[in-house]
Length: 142
Ligand code: 8DG
Ligand code: MG
Ligand code: MG
View 1 (cartoon, rainbow, N blue to C red):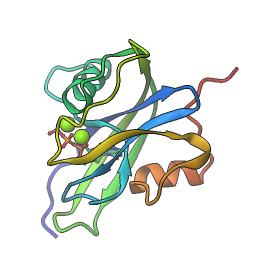
View 2 (view 1 turned 60 degrees about the vertical axis):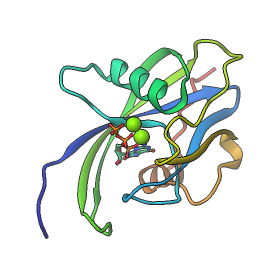
View 3 (view 1 turned 90 degrees about the horizontal axis):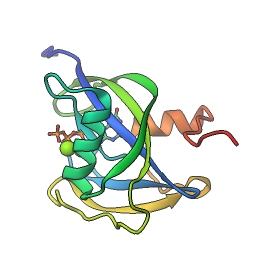
């Protein structure tokens, strides 16, 4: 196997009531699975800055109350080009509750939609699937 270096992903649980924003991926990594918005950390960025930038680029949405939740360490060995990601999971809310998501990178995503946490679509992107199976919940307590 050709070895690259681990890369850093920053992804966002954008919460809206009981729902979370997901989009079906168009990508060499895990094509057609439902994933959170997000992307690669750029040089000099904070996790919060990266989360806000990726959300804006991918969905047009402005986010608020961005905070760190957890991290995963995932090898994608079954992909055509094996990769290794350390992924930072953030939580955020809509800055403007009336703003609707737009599909600004249609080459990378089929479209964004809100899905109830109790009724998530299938198949989920593997790191997310694993978290759900382990009982992870991104919603604030209380
Ligand atoms: P960029 O060029 O905009 O920086 O990157 P991108 O095209 O938006 O990257 P991405 O694949 O959306 O996200 C970067 C990596 O983060 C992805 O290849 C693997 C990792 N990742 C996870 N879980 C999730 C997830 O739920 N959603 C997204 N988008 N990426 C995730 O480990
Ligand atoms: Mg991106
Ligand atoms: Mg992305």
